[in-house]
Length: 322
Ligand SMILES: NC(=O)c1ccc[n+]([C@@H]2O[C@H](COP(=O)([O-])OP(=O)(O)OC[C@H]3O[C@@H](n4cnc5c(N)ncnc54)[C@H](OP(=O)(O)O)[C@@H]3O)[C@@H](O)[C@H]2O)c1
Image (cartoon, rainbow, N blue to C red; front, side, top):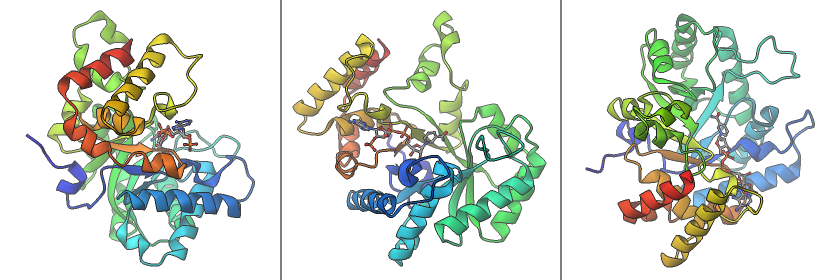
């Protein structure tokens, strides 16, 4: 049975593919945003819009705020665009060298200040979705709840979610919230198979080497949590990057992806994303390329997912697993 994507089921009109905006700002140093980066970011956004992508993923820390700033410049130049897109950002990580007191920070004040900073840089009044970026061991759900309630009441954030979190952590945070956490963003894809291995390796010794939260896929499906995959293109490993120095299974997977793309008259990007999208959890790939041609090469991903056979899905999985 084909279910709709959890975000769509909640009335959020997000596209299946998301453009990850992490590299928009360029260098991660303290240098200012350049006009050249704004232009490159514009081209990436144009390419994304041209293939129907309407959702964009940010974080307060990406290139020390410059990525959000670049996106803000694009929004300013295109009045009306803000209301046509789904804008997501994250908070909760501190960057080394910024004089912050901690690596992770889910304190009430940090969350509130971070969102104000993101809104200012993006030049918008609201985020559609705010994610807590990585678990803070010192978190207090009451403080998170207080911050979220304030952000919701002021209209600054519409929905909340998390990233890189386990089932237990989601339940722990939700214990104090009035709203559900509707997104969890994790590394998943043909280059990072743990999300499948965790399902397959139950009761196997090799299962102890799998780094994924126990039961997270099943929990997300039954609770309608939108899973989002970062690293969905495996940083180009199977779509054309030079892999001559990589292990044999990586080279074999790259060959298989190329063969499949040729047989189906499509791109390698479409095959790699289709593999992830065939999973019934309706995962949203957050693609991180800024190259307009590579973004456009993702256009057929949904069509290829719809027509990928079980046999092909398992062939890709087994080859990538080595
Ligand atoms: N929640 C988290 O903790 C977390 C962590 C990391 C990332 N993210 C989000 O997820 C997004 C995507 O992450 P990602 O960048 O790891 O994903 P990805 O889409 O797997 O990789 C994109 C990277 O691979 C390169 N690439 C792709 N195809 C290539 C090819 N054929 N040859 C050479 N290079 C190629 C891209 O460079 P080009 O730009 O040159 O194409 C880009 O640097 C980020 O932008 C961010 O929004 C979230």
